[in-house]
Image 1 (cartoon, one colour):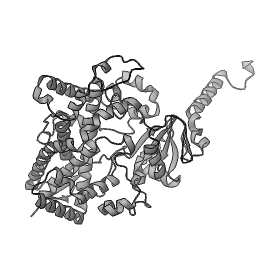
Image 2: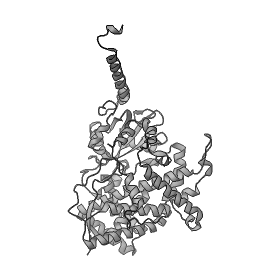
Image 3: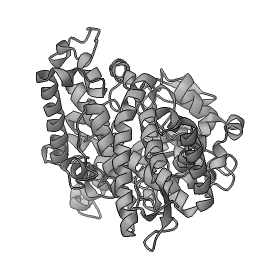
Image 4: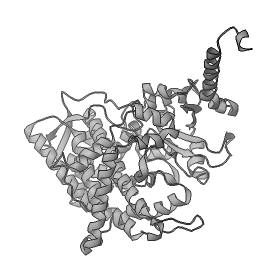
Length: 503
């Protein structure tokens, strides 16, 4: 029978395999068409992933305008629903938070971060978040402000050295050392002093974590073929360096051991101590499925401690650098901030926690910087069950992304969005605007838990600096600033500036 075929059986088999591969690689691509949701055409097997080459934010902005704020894309064969309509954003992240409780899990992060707050689901997430949240109460932040102020003084001392030597410098390096010192001090009671020791292992390892490239072959494989994550981990590949994770894991172990043997250390009121007080040893072993959990396990303490160290370092340092850049490029705005800093200090007699919180124009400048350069250009939720939100049907298991970048650059909401204009965040303009048009820390009960500490860090560093200096551009300042093609606000080539002592 096979002899009667006009071509060899081998070619028949090759053709059959090609057809099956094509069907496998395109099978999910009718998902959004069936739901009546538009979107860019995906390529077989890779979907729309390589459209990220133009920049994730720019790609989202293009789709946001073309598809009327709601569209579907594919990362490999994984459908991703993007929702930029503000009423839908509110419903998904707040009103229907019980249906959209969980975040997307990126495979290949390793066991340590697998116990972090960003990955935990449902009851486990609520349980651990309730243990962490008291860290960021007003009372605790006021106590932390003493540590933040000390670190900010060291930050200013470094600026003073640069001013005296009349040198241009990469502010991102100094800001990164400052945020590392703040996190280490406020969360763990560890005095790293990386401002005076920029090559400190904490800083070196933190930097390695953010050597992230969407087009690194390992990242591409983990994004497009998440089921291969376990195989990749066994081969020694993951989203984050194992050596770096081991370093931070050991650092947390050392601090925990120190708390056990030193009564004075155990009296601290910080992130780690709150977690240790909530430690429930019953959760460290096998836990029956029907058991109602209380407290946190040792793995959850370590996972969230490392997450705290990692998450608070890069994004806050970038925002300090970008705000200083905006002030240097817009000296008339910097003049207003300096005037406010001087007025508040003169009124209060010192620059402390209360003083920083009275600096409303400085807060407006930070907010406008976060609008222009959001720390996360997207954030996500996963739909737990078939649901309908304002006529939009969302099947169970759908990953929903909120595209922050195009919302922050929507000309109908933010006229001249490319322009740095802090007045957008005046009391009057904020009250007149939909609150879901500004999403630098996410939205709803699963927003950024460390938001208040991050803002305190930012404003303390900038206020302390502007009390004595002005930020000015230098020969190396890149205008406009360039952001790396990642999902965050990482800066291409750093932020090169000079500081001048105020007369």
